[in-house]
Image (cartoon, rainbow, N blue to C red; front, top):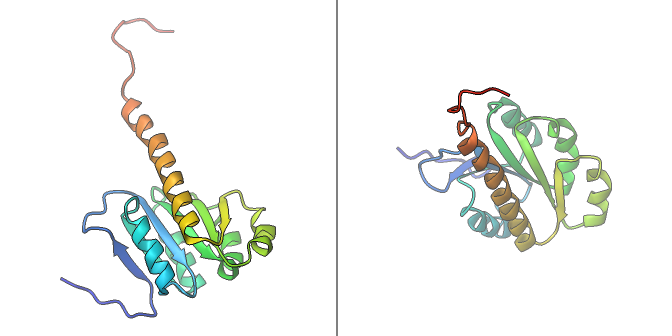
Length: 161
C-alpha cells in the first residue's frame, strides 16, 4: 500500500520499511523541501531510519509532544522557527538534541545558548550531517553497553556485599 503525501505537509521518510529503532530525526524548516535539505537528508540516512519533516511549528510541537516517552528525537530547526519551538520542547524527554541550521550563526547563538540540548548552530550542510552522525554514533555506543550489561551481573558466587 502506498500513501501519497501532499507537498506542503509533513512527511515520513523511512530509510527502509522496517523502523525498529526508537530514534528518529525531525526537521523543522520553511525550506524543508529544498534541494540542499534533500541532499542532507540522503547523507543522514546511513544512521537514521526515520526522518519526519515539518513546515509548521505547531504541528511539529504537537507531534513531538505526542511521542512515547521511550522515543528519542534529534531535531534540526531553522533559526527563526527554532526560536519559536525550542523554548517549548527543550525539556521534553523525547528530545535528546537540537541543531540550529541557519545562515546567521551569531544571532542564533545568542538565543540558543540558554538551551542545553542545542548541540550546535551550524550553517554548512556537511558540518551538520557530520555532527549529527558523530553524535548518533556516540549515543549508540552509550546505549548498547547498558543494554548488553544489564543482565551481566555476577550472582553465582552466593555471597552478598
